[in-house]
Length: 282
Image (tube, rainbow, N blue to C red; front, top):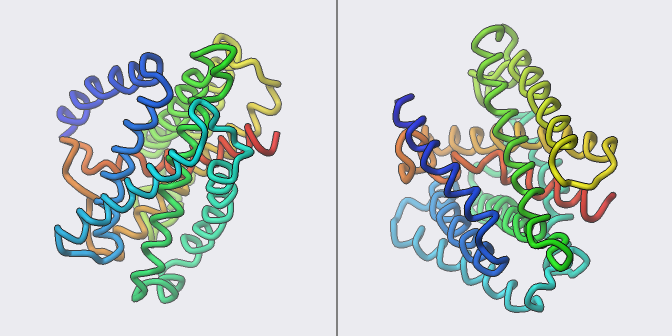
């Protein structure tokens, strides 16, 4: 399993970086839209859709909704102050605060949504749509002045999340004794969380020092810490929904890694939260 994970990572990481820096904003948005459709297909299981045809329609409807929102925004002007862009980013802040409560009070909180397919679908919309617009808004940021500014920002967020995830895994394996959320994800520990945050802080310092981000260090640090914490919450939230659905992986599209949602669960929280803080709050 580890061998497959490493091989897949070595293949996917260069592809992701190439997409960030080589694709124009419209092309990048279309690739992100496809990823979101695959995520919606997998969310169908979490929402209680056992039928393949139902999940296909769910993916198509997700793509149609995002395409419609894209067409309503002027080309190359995905300003975060437009309702279609800023609205989902603000909604993500509310959703992840609510998700934090659902995770903290699980399994008691599941009584509120366990038997409600519309609610679980709504949770999917609040996870996938803001993620899409967070990716698009960050990639578009500063595009008129420098075509690569947004690509650096997105690469930074991804490295931050990957660092937090890897740091949590390593420190958790070495030092983990105190469970973080045993009823949701028994493998995660407080030691791992702290190790992940330390790793993210190091990445933040290095990137802020050597990459062309042009941001006040204190602002970057605050946004980075909150985004790293949000990434952990995104992972725990998906684990909670998978536990309720009785599945281990959201899908099997990525060898050794499970499904698309399993790979982007942390990013679905970190990207829109980071984008909202950097582009709307600060």
